[in-house]
Picture 1 (cartoon, rainbow, N blue to C red):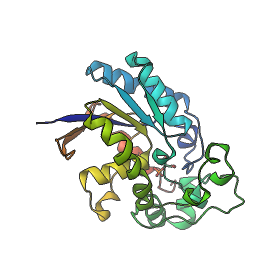
Picture 2 (tube, rainbow, N blue to C red):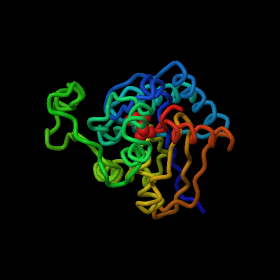
Picture 3 (cartoon, helix red, strand yellow):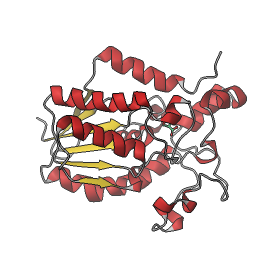
Picture 4 (cartoon, rainbow, N blue to C red):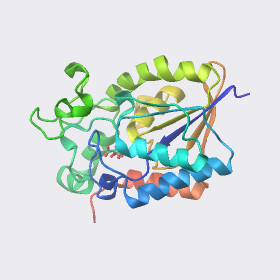
Length: 251
Ligand SMILES: O=C(O)[C@@H](CO)OP(=O)(O)O
């Protein structure tokens, strides 16, 4: 029997998702569709009478705003919310700001799939002088420059997200709090990889759709018993396929 239940939600569509640009740590806002997706995520949770005592998110506004819109739907403005850079999207290196379909047309769909989904192959690094370098971003000024990545593969994202999971989120779960984590496609893939012990070669095929809550039921050792999305299967399948297809060259 499940001892704990947690919910993971990827933010609603961002303006850069809409333009099909590699986003990473760029602080893109939600698109109008993304706002609607976030509200819908809250409605799905409400219909299922799923509620929360505490929430965690990244320091990027697409996740922060999605979380707030879910709180609005659930009338849960009052719960503690913790934001941390360790839940940020994977740093996409020199690909940030580039169009995914154009990159696939230029370098091939196979190469783009490696950059997007391979476990341990990072994209090329950002230039130090890049406008996207987090070392020049006021959000990250208090952090040691050495922890701020210039690129990341999923393995790097797992390594920097897990300390936050173990030190902050796990104690909340174990204390009986109902936890919501609102984060990003790849920071959530990192967490799912860890929870479900997904082999490196299988994580390549895992895509997480925007704005559809993913419920994990865990046993007393925090091993997953089952997981499921709160939306109808056909809606989930289409949303997952849409994410996978973003890396295809336009025909
Ligand atoms: O661009 C990004 O930062 C991520 C999530 O939006 O995209 P992808 O699905 O290609 O990893």
